[in-house]
Amino acid sequence: MIGTIVYGLTIGGILYIISVGLSLTFGTMRIVNFAHALVYTVSAYLLISMLPFLGENFVPAALVAVAAVVPLSYVIERYVIRRLYGTSIDYAIIATYAVLLIGVDLIKWIWGATPIPLSDPVNKSVTLLGVSIPVYRLLIIALSILMFGLLEVFFRRTIIGKIIVAGLEDKEAAQSIGLNVDRYFSLVFVLGSCLAALGGVLYAPITTIHPYMGFQVLLLSFAVVLVGGLGSLRGTFAAAFFLGMVMAITGRFWGPAAETMVFVIMAVVLMIKPIEV
Amino acid sequence: MSTNRWDTLRRFDVIILATIFIALAWILTVHRTTDFIIFCIFVLAYDLLYGYMGRLSFGHMLYFGVGAYAAALTPEYVSGNPFAALALALAAGALVGVLLGPIIVRTTGACFALINLAFNQVGYFLVLIAFAAYTGGEDGKAAFFDKVWFLDFGNRTVVFVTALVSLLLVSYFLGSLTNSPFGILLRTIKENELRARFLGYDTYRYKLLAFTISTSLSAFAGWLSILNYTYATPSFIDPHRNVEVIFASLIGGAGSIYGAIAGGIAYMAISNYLPNYIQRWEMFLGMTLLLLVFKFQTGIWGFVSSLFNMPRTEEKS
Image (cartoon, rainbow over all chains, first blue to last red):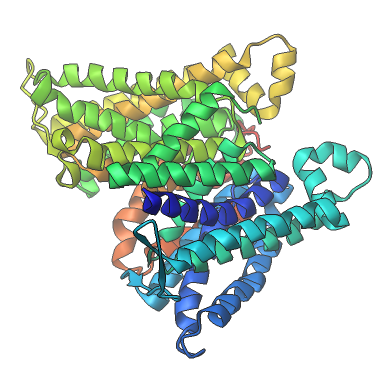
């Protein structure tokens, strides 16, 4: 039981980190950024490629992997999304999907399609009420709560953060008081991509790394964003941990149904509280 | 070519379309051409939502797969009559549309795309794992139908003729539907839903109706593909395959019946013959998609139309 709870919180923490990035781009730009899934996957692959160079040290390799997606996401935003943004949102969505397809195929080309397992970087466990729990998972939970705190400070205390929140909550109102919300899109996009990359490197040791890993996670984080409420950062936090627990509990009884259960809950939430966007 | 001659040509579109597909059946094989036709019907169903109503779905394989599995399971559990399978496939497609529609059609843009995809994922899971005892899971399900009267669907030519007649009927149906007041209202919703609502239309009802028509027609295409393949596998409902119909719709030109058919043929031709020469297939698809959205937004049909200076039917938002 303790094991299930810790597992649920771990998944919730990772889901939070990934979906808050998705929530940012989705809330401000109104596009589903399929490239989010690509960034997530790329970071995990960069992590395993960097590990041998950095003496198998997890933290520096993870930092390099997260930093490396900054130029990648900037290029995607600048040359794909921004060029299509004025014409049609549908085209921008299709274009990010095209970027995902190209990227996944490149990954298969470079690293191959075989799933790669990664060992636990901490490799220690603590015993809690007779259940052994990997320290790494506890670290993820702590880190996700820390990220929540940092993002709260960033969005409530700094002027850039406040502008982004204003854009999230009501873009037109923010524009009408003279804020050039669009100018902050690049920043939001890169920030969101970094969060996706962070989620990718954190989740990599728990699961196996394979080229299509981003696809599932993108859908799950999308469900988190919808259940939490569009443009609500605190809602995303609560929804991530709630759905993480749902996944862990469902997975305990019937493994393959864990992810489907999330979508069922998403459907129920949308039935009770339909979104009109 | 003057507009006048173009109009004359258009009057014979049924004959021209039939000739094109019969010629294709001659050049390729009957079985493969049937596959082309079925895909064209699927693209037509998809285009009703994307091209006319302006809703980009990333999960249309679900509705195709629902029809396919409903048809494939009929011989074993209900009856071997292929038309019973047809009725069940259509009913299943409509039922999914009516059940999921209220959740899906309220949304637009990115939400619409991804909610469809999420439900497609659920459907895939149900077929592959949850109901594997009935659907055969990864192995799929074979389906053989009884001979009804003179129609023996074991014969490839019969399936081909059925598919071709269906395509002509579906394109006629969609052609009159999209030119009716209902179709014009759909285009109004695409342009500006708020204004349509302001005029007093309950847009939700119309969107739900269009969505259900689209899901039912997709299920119909699923039934046809069961006739053609005589088995259903999870690839019929695989969410990763959604890009195919989006690609076809874009390359043909969204918002036009002929565009959808041109796109269906173009995609099937590309996907049937190019992978032999291209190693990195997904990359090729992605590159072409980027090219399409950047440089070639009106697609093949838009290009052909502008060549003949025809008044454009499709509107780009």
